[in-house]
Image (cartoon, rainbow, N blue to C red; front, side, top):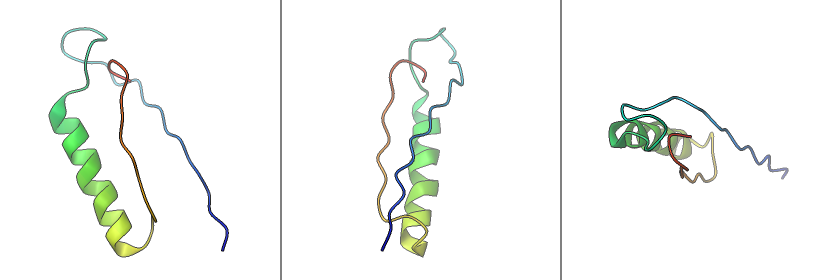
Length: 53
C-alpha cells in the first residue's frame, strides 16, 4: 500500500494581527479531518500552527 504525506500551510490572518489561530477554526479543522479519517479517506492527521499560519 502506498502512502502520500501532505503538508498544507494556510496563511489566513487573525483578529490581532499575525499572532494566533482562532480556536474555532482549529476545532472545525479537527472535526472535518476526523470525519475523513473515520470514512477511510485519511489514515491519520495532525494539526499544528505557528502564529496564524
